[in-house]
Length: 292
Image 1 (cartoon, rainbow, N blue to C red):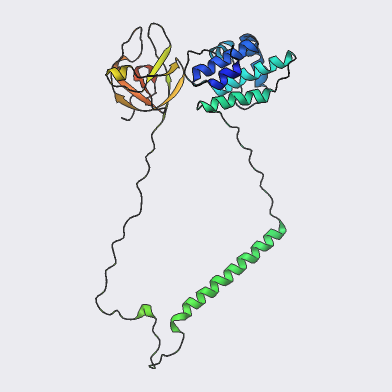
Image 2 (image 1 turned 60 degrees about the vertical axis):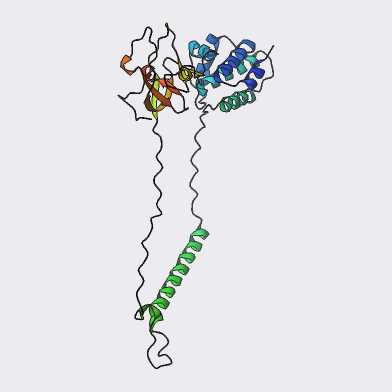
């Protein structure tokens, strides 16, 4: 029988990652109610990103039918609660090493793990000897600049007269001879600005499918056999956040017990993952998005 370590190592999508969390809770962890109580104690330790979680939230983390990324802060609470519970039963458990395994697996699936802010570096006081050296360097620079200016000012008039008894004339002031050449038209080296794709934070606000709260996403929005069969295997639950970029007209989807903006049926949003999701399920907070 596979252990949670085996399942975590072999996880190729978020559903399998969630399944590994379920195996961890069954093998080593407390009940979800006890984990919720422990999360309140963890939240008092001022660990970045860690907050208290309800038993329902922790239980949802183990739903292997969800193919969306969980929040890392909730995963960290889950793993720490299991590791500490296991240690209290007398086992030798390196909680930080276990947490690193889960963090590595989270990043392998392209999940975002918040990094703690770097503390500001204290400003070092200026040392007296540094101030003295800086003054010498500045003074020397002023002398060099003044000397160079004096040479540039006197150069055209130096040298007296030439071999023909006439005063020397600098090359730049000599009268032009022949046909003057026109300066070439300068060419612009400016490059067009890079246009960045816009990002619109959104959430799943509506669903149907016979009462299901799961919304599937596709790689193709067209009304074709290929489009209708292009499920990517990823899904979002009701209330879950996502980010979209633009909208495009595509096929309409069948609606069941639906109470959202039905006039959007046939409109699709492209997500930052490159996948497409029916607009009827997504609340962007806007009337429309830029066209893809």
